[in-house]
Length: 421
Image 1 (tube, helix red, strand yellow):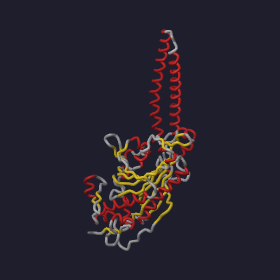
Image 2 (cartoon, rainbow, N blue to C red):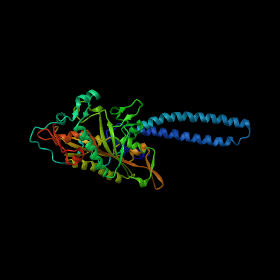
Image 3 (cartoon, rainbow, N blue to C red):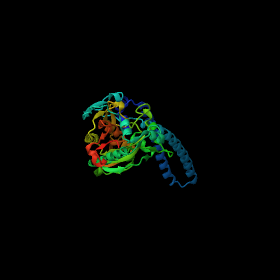
Image 4 (cartoon, rainbow, N blue to C red):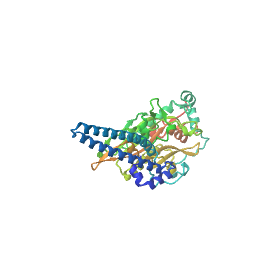
């Protein structure tokens, strides 16, 4: 959430940010409502001050008849205050609804564009495999090697259901264990985060309003998180941190749930867009400094790239254009892995920073020079499973239908190849 003072003082900048991000927020309406909010607040505060002064006078009045007149006037004043407070409540609801729709201001370096087709490729890494045989897709490979059961997964879960089994399950554990060692070597504190999270925290991260159709809701009106970013930001909600403790560096593992509601007809087969998966997430809360945010953003993104490079999977890095940038983001990178049978790259990770947008909503502050200041936040995918299995098995398949295991995973997996038994 942006500061209303910043919005008022920089209305043209915020309007331009909304235009770039294709946001339909009516900022002139917000200013109109904010004017009304301020007017009523000022009136209520003035009447309360008048009420306090009258109360002080009443205590000094000795004449009963005169005191009774004062009390009648006080009651009238109290009734007016109550009426204005009810009006203020309605105005505040409208004000909050509009404020939650105001997008963050993208960094000046973010490229312009209307959608994902305008995202900018910054680099590619790795050599794409050149097979001297007819390669198979991950569905065929994993079925042939008895690593997955989609049919029974659909029977039990429904659309996009799956069971990982045998070496499919063991390979996932190997990736988790290797990723844990790799990323904890980057000076993070490990967490296992809750998945059921209060609705208010999805507003805090910026997933609400906007992603309602992609979230699983519980009967208690909570939601299942699609990323550990949500509970990990909630960890310090309404806290004042110590400046000397910053940056806070967290690595969180959690199950994740997404309906993929806007993806019907896309990637309906295999492990690309499943409804439930597992993910390690990097998250940093740092001082309110643009330079610090930029530095940590590059670091988090590079951590993921290094992990993928250690596996030997070809990838590319994209800079997300303004039209594809989420409302809360200042800047984002996507990392995409090469999928040989689709002859394209597929997203595996994203890295984003927010300035104080999220921390303002979560009321996460720290003490600096005797004042409470809103902190900055960043997050980035470390690695998700099972999606990474798609690129891993397709890139490392061999002529006999076996899958070569990347060298760094062998100590965790226990063998260097998956073959038919």
